[in-house]
Length: 326
Figure 1 (cartoon, rainbow, N blue to C red):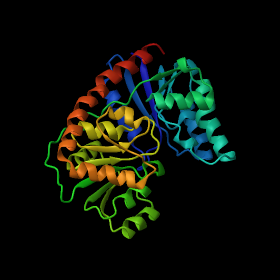
Figure 2 (cartoon, rainbow, N blue to C red; figure 1 turned 90 degrees about the horizontal axis):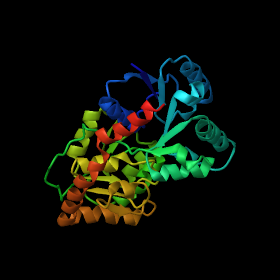
Figure 3 (cartoon, helix red, strand yellow; figure 1 turned 120 degrees about the vertical axis):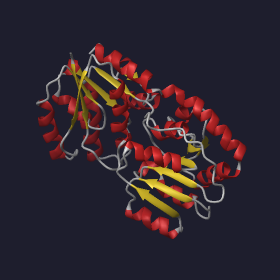
């Protein structure tokens, strides 16, 4: 039985989607594979990268899958037996300079050149990889993220007087800095999942936003956060895929998200789309969902239909095809 070694980054409480994605894939893999899940022991500082490469070089398997973020790990593995998944190129959204150039070499250029097969989670990310590296498009296979099956449909009456607005992630691209002023004066409770930066905590206090914060959630706890929400607000400025879009729809929650790729494609016409760079646009989207019951119901109904595209079985089948040919 071939051994499939899935390689993950060291856990970080602010980043958890990669681990959830491949836990779902692993649960549906054909039993012809013996699965081994390996977590690299160090964060990706310069010293950590060197130590992680030494660690990865000692791994023994028939197929290796670097599941994302630690792309450089492929350089320590057998080229013909290794698959790399690139979720996004957000790390290149930095000012030009030596640090950005080094990051591009280590996390993108060298791994892309080295690997025989690359998967990515959206056409938008595929375009970025080709643009930044000159990689032949035929080398990249687009496989969307699967929906986490622990997310459950939870019908509930919308609280129009003080809705719970679920907001996921606190990295700069998640856009909390614009969300806070957008909610100024709107009676709601902002349920934040992620570690809130100190500067954003001051903004929350300045705008007198009622909020709760949760970190290090299990999958079940995250599913319960969707179930407890009245609407999901995900006006991200940059994503490789935007899994919360599909998760919100699966939970039966009206969704406000960005009118940008790939979020708008993942949403499939079943979300209120806003300009994530414009505070009034975000505000108007939230108010529209709160005030218009028929519109909310339409978003929920269309979302439940749209999310069928991201079934775990179909996504896993596509990964299996690549594993069997590696």
